[in-house]
Image (cartoon, rainbow, N blue to C red):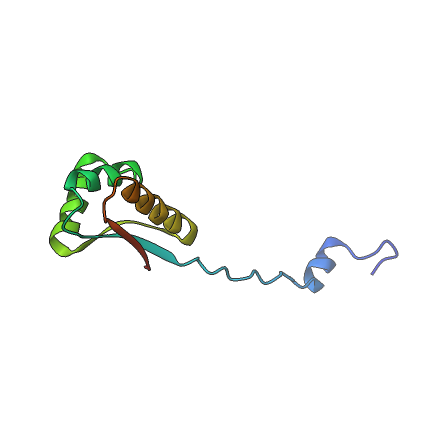
Length: 109
């Protein structure tokens, strides 16, 4: 070594690459928002809910409504917990305001 200190080549030879370990981030769980069929809520009301709350186009909303009607339930979307919880609350509130027994739930995806 010279009195001026080590040169770049010497530093590179002895320099250890010390990199902090990055924490592994776990993706938050996702939740499906599901409508449950009943015999009283009008199909048109369900389509309107799917369009207004879930932002579906009319054709897609009609497909989901028919899935709810024929299979007993249908998935409206998949969201993180807070958004899914909010959408369920919105659906239930609007259904209650219109006196429809429409049920909406969230289930872990």
